[in-house]
Each structure stands twice: as C-alpha cells, then as structure tokens.
Image (cartoon, rainbow, N blue to C red; front, side, top):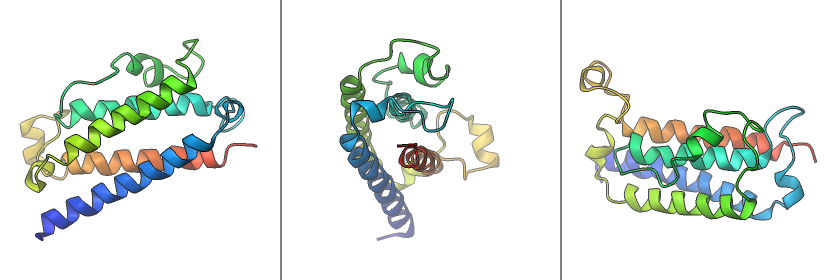
Length: 160
C-alpha cells in the first residue's frame, strides 16, 4: 500500500467511525431530546441533524461527485439559523435523508482513487490550488469530519 493509499484509507476510516458514532447517537434520541437546545438559546438537536445532513450533502458538489440530493436544505439549515424557518422536516424525514446522503457519499468515496483525493476541490480555482495543493478533496473530508465531531460533542453535552 502506498503512502497516499494508506493516508486516504485512514481518513475515510475516521469519517466512517465518526458517522457511526453519529448514527448511534441519532438512533437513540427520543423526540423530546431532538427538540432540546444544545445550550440555552442555541440550536436544537433536530436543527443540527438537518444542518449536518445539508453540509454533508454539499460534499457531493464540493468534491465533484455530483449534485446535491437535497439542495433545499442549504436555505433551511446552513444559510439561516435555527427557528428562522418553521416547520422543519420531521425527525423521521431528517433521519432518512441523513442516511441517504451519507450512504451516497460512502459509495462515491469508494470510487475515488488516492490521487483523485489529492486533487483540488471544486470551491477553488486551479490557480489557487497551484499556490496551495494542501487545499484538496482530502482536506475537505478532514474538515467535515472535524465539523461532525464538534456538533456531536454539543449534542452529547446538551442539557438533559
């Protein structure tokens, strides 16, 4: 296994592990828990599930893997704060979309070769990539794994 293959394998394994932790957490929360704020006056867990789904869905386009599955979530869960748009999709709908988006991504990740992971992502120009090749697809996946971990920490520490 080359260094690039090993690196990509490790980072995708980290993504899968973090997704697994999120899946487990989301599957155990009650409807009442989904409606709790992570801190007084902050996002509800329901909103964070939609937010994470929207951000992960955006990986389709930023990594050049295809179109978003739920582009309407950008306006609901990324551009606007919690409670700005009501009603939100139901918990069961959001859990279904979460699973669909992440399954699609994992399937598409498996098709990328290690050298493709080290290519530029679609949110930057070729000129910018030439200046800083560390801003590649793999760095985006690392960033989104950290983003997911951050929000999982918020959810785990949400007041009971």
